[in-house]
Structure formats: structure tokens, C-alpha cells
Length: 278
Ligand code: NAP
Image (cartoon, rainbow, N blue to C red; front, side):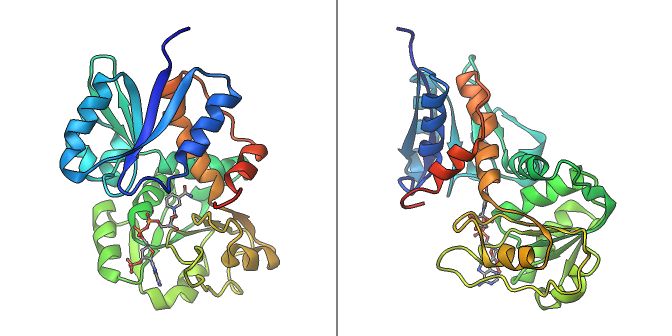
């Protein structure tokens, strides 16, 4: 039997991660001789543990909280998008022992939307992004790459929105968190990147009554998949996309690289990811 291919996810805490369920489903489904392992890493051991994984023959790892930004200092190559976002969620260990750091969140976001709405044309009008946390930068970078002419960025803590807007230039305009009604009016893409709507969190309440009829509303929250924001939007007849597909598509690139096989995002997989404690 050939040597199994190895990959995993590093973080702290790590045992809650759903990535092992996802990647091990794909390994089994595609009959690949490989393992995907959750690995708890102490902050003062990050560099040593990465070297150990390379020595042990790992092909790479996903990176989660709290190492998404600090991991960049150990990478030999940083993709343009990871550099702009300032964080990586996927590492590739090259055969020469060198490390490439990538951020696949924006890829997953975009691929998920085009899967449901192949004719989505974000360049045709302004976007509203709510939230200025870790995920927001990947979304803003992707929207701008897709040709969005103007982004209105709203966040409860305005200083964080200001910092992001400054890093992206004059296409990103900060709008007061409490002035969303006006901001939403001409948007054709609306993206919730806050954690509002997540289980245990209050809902994100937006006035969706006076917005463009051809708007697409995306929620990054995937637990629950059908957030109250999306439910309201659907009731009013707007197109919506939930966060689960993004979670699955963002994993596609790492899996393809480590296990030499492009995995399928299927409805069966989505159902499995929603089982039990998810
Ligand atoms: P984060 O860095 O912790 O940012 C949280 C954001 O939510 C901040 O903008 C924060 O505003 C805002 N927020 C939290 N509580 C709020 C409240 N009560 N009122 C108003 N705003 C509030 O988190 P993140 O990593 O960006 O993730 C954000 C969400 O996206 C989470 O639900 C996460 O699960 C989801 N996500 C999904 C995917 C996917 O693949 N679908 C990928 C990444 C993230 P302040 O700055 O004012 O605190």
C-alpha cells in the first residue's frame, strides 16, 4: 500500500473545528488514501510544530483562530490575496520544505454565489458590506476584484471599518452603523460578515423594504444556515445565498493541492455538515 497523504488543521482551540468532518468525508467519498487531522498548537510552539509537520510529510494544513495572521511570518511565499487580507487559512508545504500561505475565503464566497447565481454581475452596482472583522477583508477584496465600483462599509465599531477602508483605497466608503437604511437603497450586493444572526447572537435587523429589486443578499453565517435576515429577504422576494456553501468551497483549494483531487460540493455533503452538533 502507498504511503497515505497527510493534511490537517491547526488552531487553539481546535476540537470544535468542522474541517475534519468535511475533509474526511471527501477522502472517503473519493476513495483517497489520506488523513486529515485536527492539531492543537500552543502559541509558543507554532513555528516548531509547523517544522515538525513538514518533517513528518504533511502536505499542508488549514489554519484557524488565533493563528491566521501570525502564520504569515513563517511563510516563504504569501499569495497576493493573503497579503492584502493580512491573514491565511491554508498552507501548502512544497516538496522542497518551503511554505506557501493562501487565503481561500474570498474564493469560497465567490464560487458559492456563482454556483447559485451564474449571472451575478457585481460590477453593475454598489455593494454594502456589514462588519469589519476577520472575514470582511476577504469579502471586500473579492468584491473589488470582481469589479464592484463602490463599497459602503458599516460596522458597529467604526474605527475598525475606517482601518479597513484605508487599506483598500477610495472605492470603500465607511457609513455609520445606524445609517444602513440609506446605504442599502442602491446596493445590488449586500453581504453580512458580522456574527449577528449566528446561534446565540441577536439577529441582524435591516430595513429591506426600499432596496433594489435585483439585489443579492449573502449571509456568511452558516449556523443556522437559514438566518432570520435571509428568511426575511426571501419573504420579500429577493435572491439570497447562505454561508454554508462558502465554507465548503473555500476548502476545495486546500484539498485539491494536498490530495491531488478536486472534491465535489454536493447537497449530500451539505446535509452531512448540518448533522448533529453542527
Ligand atoms: P470577527 O472577526 O469576530 O468579527 C465579528 C464582526 O461582527 C465584527 O464586525 C463585529 O463588530 C460584528 N459584531 C459582533 N457582534 C455584534 C453586535 N452585537 N452588533 C453589531 N456587530 C456585531 O468574526 P469573523 O471571523 O469576521 O466572522 C464573522 C462571521 O462570519 C461569523 O459568523 C463567522 O462564522 C462567519 N464566517 C463564515 C465563513 C464561511 O465560510 N461561511 C467564513 C468566515 C467567517 P465589532 O467590530 O463592532 O465588534
